[in-house]
Figure 1 (cartoon, rainbow, N blue to C red):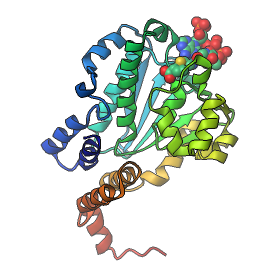
Figure 2: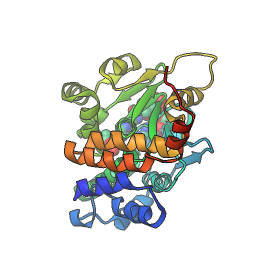
Figure 3: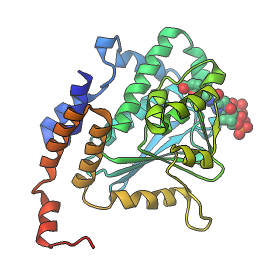
Length: 305
Ligand SMILES: CC[C@H](C(=O)O)C(=O)SCCNC(=O)CCNC(=O)[C@H](O)C(C)(C)COP(=O)(O)OP(=O)(O)OC[C@H]1O[C@@H](n2cnc3c(N)ncnc32)[C@H](O)[C@@H]1OP(=O)(O)O
């Protein structure tokens, strides 16, 4: 059922009503009422812990910037910010012109995880599980957006903040920044899907070390183990956000349907068994074959020297 939902999600975006139907079906694609998950119930509980916001800025260029904004708590996630994030992801799912996404924290730091005040109030196992399912659904949908995503890590990404970085396709780190899965120190393991994604990014040996040792991962170590793609060096060459935009623009240059198709085939290769991935690739190929960008390239007899 889950694989079916993934495939439907991948095929999304082709046309109007059908795309919207598939989009609705793919919502909450990890957990639904079948798993005892009631989205409205947990949304209401989370809304009782307000503070901060998640800001979304979409640009005509097809690039969007999502900002985690609660500087007085080092951009920790309040309950209402978890709900905000889900809403912003819904907006991005419906953005047909989207090609790239940068996820950043406000005021020079990424995110210090869950707001400990909300965590204390929701510390019974039932509430913890509901919050965990809510955030897994949201971060899975974030990772599966048909656009190329980057976490721009400045300052610290701790606990749930470290997990959030793994829900992006790439991580770019500013000098002096740190990603740390502090869960062990909190008597926990990741619950927002961060462990499963981390294993896929750095391999199980490295993941075991990072989680088991609650290791402070600086940019150098992150590059070495493949957690980060690049360190954003270069004083005087713009803000870290501008540098991240430049980095991403290499991969988002071109028409939106083509960039979205690129993300979809890579996503299916990453998530689906080979036969399923091949069939999905064929379907996605069908959306660009003979399309405007393809016809234009053929007409211009482009060479690739
Ligand atoms: C572990 C699993 C769980 C999940 O996955 O859901 C989590 O994420 S639990 C949260 C894990 N994060 C933490 O435990 C962070 C704890 N905070 C710190 O270690 C420090 O505050 C730090 C390193 C983020 C920043 O240190 P610094 O000295 O630069 O600043 P302050 O400590 O003075 O922090 C400023 C202000 O922010 C508040 N703050 C920071 N993080 C959180 C948070 N996660 N929840 C709530 N509040 C947070 C801190 O208490 C300060 O507020 P103040 O009113 O001035 O005391």
